[in-house]
Image (cartoon, rainbow, N blue to C red; front, side, top):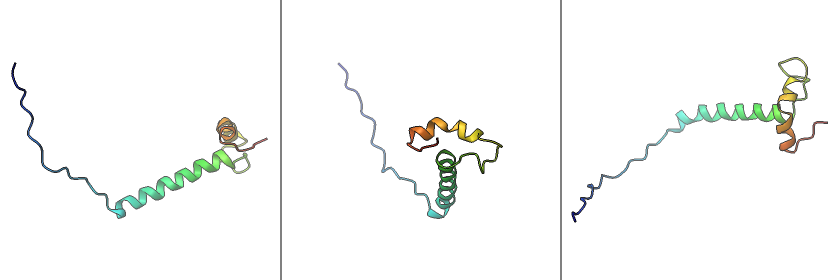
Length: 72
């Protein structure tokens, strides 16, 4: 039976760091996007929607009930 040769160990693994200056704009962008989604799911009743009528309300109707928001 032959012995299996083990691979040599690699050097230390360097974990990349992301500077806060590069991360900040993405945090703001996704934070605003999340607030917009929460608004459409929770508060929008069609009065200030971009599409006329209550189209957005109907699109998020089931999500609204799933999250516990009343809409009727």
